[in-house]
Amino acid sequence: MIDTLFRHLFGPAPEPLSPLDTRLALAALLVRVARTDGLYAAEEVDRIDRVLITRYGLGPFEAARLRAEAEEVEADAPDTVRFTRALKEATPLEDRTGLMEAFWSVALVDGSRDAEEDRLMRLVANLLGLTDVQNAQARQRAERGA
Image (tube, helix red, strand yellow):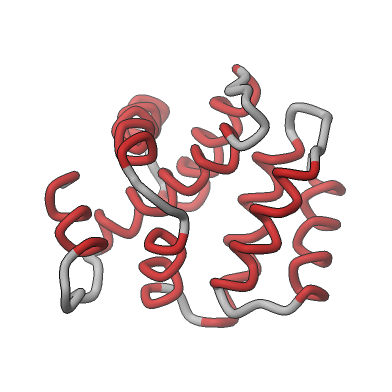
């Protein structure tokens, strides 16, 4: 699955991602969000797993396995643009704010925000085709749900 995702992300003429590859791209971007502040705390790992369980109906072991695979993909990926491009292609516009809410829930779960996290979140929202207002609304929903 990792090889397929990398071929899609780095190939010259990308094809649409399969649902499994889309899951991996989302999980990898969630991991990237969690690691942005230089820490990868247990509560962030737990939140990623809960997002994957809720979004995809996975069991806890399946979610943990997907996250572990995503940790490898994220560590090897050169940039964020390719993950967001793949998710944008696979996700209707009206569902992308839900993605941002998930990203914010991971970014905020450790109780702190830093400039680097804010920068990444603005970049991700922009690359997903969302406005600053939609991004702020997603953050506010994530803050209320935390």
